[in-house]
Length: 250
Image (cartoon, rainbow, N blue to C red; front, side, top):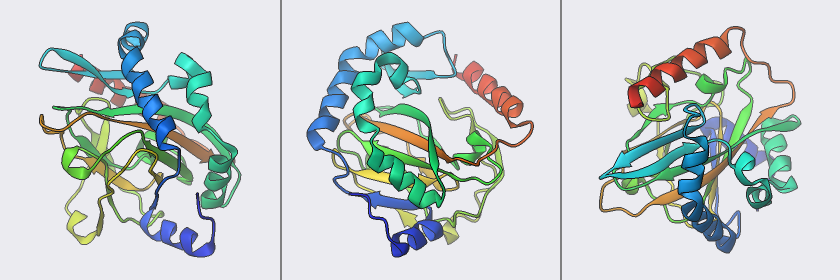
């Protein structure tokens, strides 16, 4: 399911992303999508005051979840089915060090959803060594034309400066994007159960979703290496960026 050999590790280090087809049961993923749809209004009602953890967008009078970072708080038994020892072992293999679970999130791409700015996750994490990976699990069909995630192949040691972003749910973006034409692109097309694994220094983004495209959902896990340390002063600076971002979308 999640290959672990030196060629895979070398490719991951050079591009910062791997694609794993059929990583999870399609039936389980579609079941999770339906669960989120059935409980979306309940999640919004319960967490609407937590603007750091829940970001919604209203399109044509309908309120949609764009980003929600407490699925385990809402229903650990249901969403915990995705967090397996296989994933943890794969994270440890790619980080070349024991991995520790940090967060789970639901992301939603719906007709009319705004873009996701080009960014590296470590701008949000603030890790000194950047040693973190994310498993991005598609719960249904998703492609770049419909606002699906896109990647630029970036060596895991290359980190870019970021600046504030006003796009909902994404408070930071890469400041200087002038060199992007020199990077090769990876444009995954996901089916239910497909997964990309990306490093915290992966460059990724998404375009806005056309109104003609169906909604899509993603469930994602993030892991840090066991020795990772957050940079001094990062928490305060990141909180300021989040506060500014949420004020812009309030």
